[in-house]
Image (cartoon, rainbow, N blue to C red):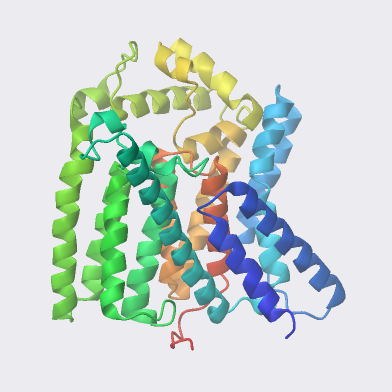
Length: 413
């Protein structure tokens, strides 16, 4: 069909621009939407299929629109609604282009997505090396360099790129590479040596991003692949080596975060005064204040526009002055959704993951399950569906993958 290559190009462009500047990604989405509408208008007999996943996404958007009716800050509410417009746009695109979305298109899109992650990582490393040379320190982790190879300093060269959000994208790319090597053999079409090299390269990158969450999810992924490869001795040795590398890197990039953390005290303490906070204690304070807010606004929430203003009141009420000064959100998407639109928004968000896992299990779609699991956990430590980078990555790949049945998992040529 004359539209087939155009649709391939548009979907690939959306995927490729996800790790980069949001303007380019937004332009790609707008072009794809316009093309989908034109195609649908000129081909009224085209195949269209509504996936159950689209419904909770659109409901989350609709609930936010309704919440604007009782917000005190329309400007902030509209800004957050603008970020979430893809909850409506991406399902419409995938619905109108249903006839084009098949395993071949998905595999092409995933391949180019992995390549875009590799390109972004090369940009990060190149910038870190150049900055290190400029400051003339042979040790890239020397404090004089500002730790150019780690966390925010590594990813800030691409404006708007938070290391943890980029890390979830890297994690998904790692899952694609592993899944392709074990089960599909049709995404990357590369030999085993290069596949293992890419895996090790992205593994090192993942630990440079320096996150408890990413470390935990990565280890779960490795254990899962180890289970799939239980009959392959060579692969088992590789998995064991990868685990060894992971543990070693953890000692360099994650264990240092444990300094000063008293798990029992940080979790149980309700004294949120002062300005010295560990990662655990700060999150406990945010969660406690958020739950306090929710308990008084259970049914309708306080609206996205008033979220921050209301949280500040509860931070002050609970003496979490550091949180008020920094204007923290809840750092938990489930709590954020509750604050936005009450119990209804929370239940719709939970139902979204139910649909993802049900569809993934029925269609043997391990990639859909993977991104669902990543975000199920990611939402516990971040308000992941507030930032553009978090929203588009999640919505685009779930809407794309939900259209493919992997029960018949033949190689794609």
